[in-house]
Amino acid sequence: MSPFAMSATDWQLVPLDRVPPMPWRNGGGVTRELLAWPRADDWQVRLSVAEVAADGPFSAFAGIERWFAVLQGAGVALTIDGTAHPLDATSAPLRFDGGAVATCRLLDGPTLDFNLMAPPGRARMQRIREGLHVAVGAGTLVAAYAHADPVTLPGLSGDLPARTLAWRVTQGPWSGQVQAREMLWMEVVA
Image (tube, rainbow, N blue to C red; front, side, top):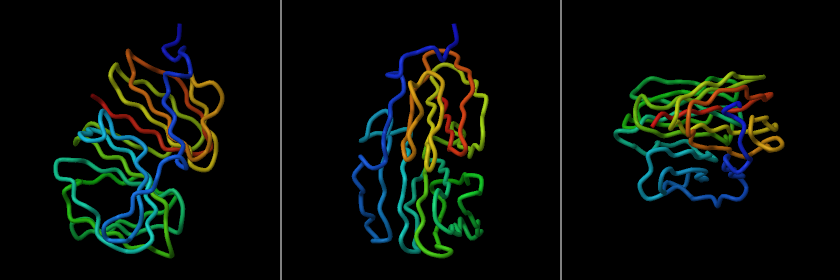
């Protein structure tokens, strides 16, 4: 039996439009926290979508590794410890030290961006077009974010709707194929 042979309840689904926006203290945007795991008040993994409306600094998270991907808009230039990184909705996600001095400059208007925060060296995020064969060990948090188009996840009844996060923690070794025109795929090792 395939390790993906499970009920749909094994995947936790979080539609973006059901998460209230949290305004930033600097007034430059809002964040919708899709997952703070294992607990909101003491997370090891945080997944969120940010609406960035103005240039400004990023909050520092010492001891955390950040991954950043543009979902929508013309893009941004992230300057991290003095080095500029231009990113748009086709760029690979950028990984950087959450404690670094980071600022964001919008290239041509507001953007919608995805953020993954986790302990250093334990996470990865990639932009997938078409499909991906996945193989992970037990205790891995896996997540898929479908932004514009539905995503097919083995073990999920029906497609993952656009603008929705699906996540779960594997109970044993897990492998299979995910299909999408475009998605973000994330893995965090316990």
